[in-house]
Image (cartoon, rainbow, N blue to C red; front, side):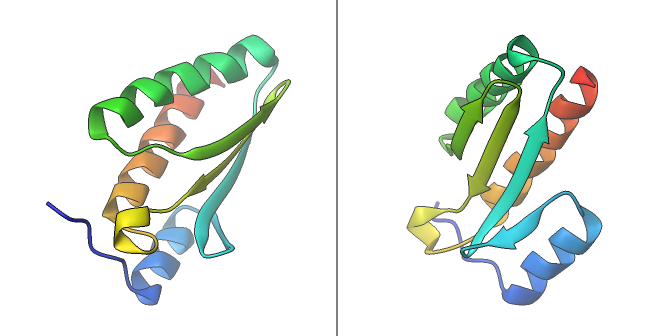
Amino acid sequence: MDSLKSTEDQVLAFISENQQWALKDHKLHCEFVFSDFVQAFGFMTQVALIAERSNHHPEWFNVYKKVVVDLTTHEAGGISDKDFKLAIAMDKIAETLS
């Protein structure tokens, strides 16, 4: 099933409820900072397993203990429910690591 692009109101509501996330370049954006590289890599590994199962992969960048994430659904032409679900999963993983 194709994902539908979320409305601007839906995106703003998500950001309002999940304030660590922001809108940047029409994508959900978050920067996670961990205690060290191993913890950051462990976070990425856990997220990668979820992303692969859901066939929805993040745009991300890692340097040492920092992981920068941008989420968008290319097939929907913007942010979709898939991005909200992956963002929430990322937050839960990050919380267990802190």
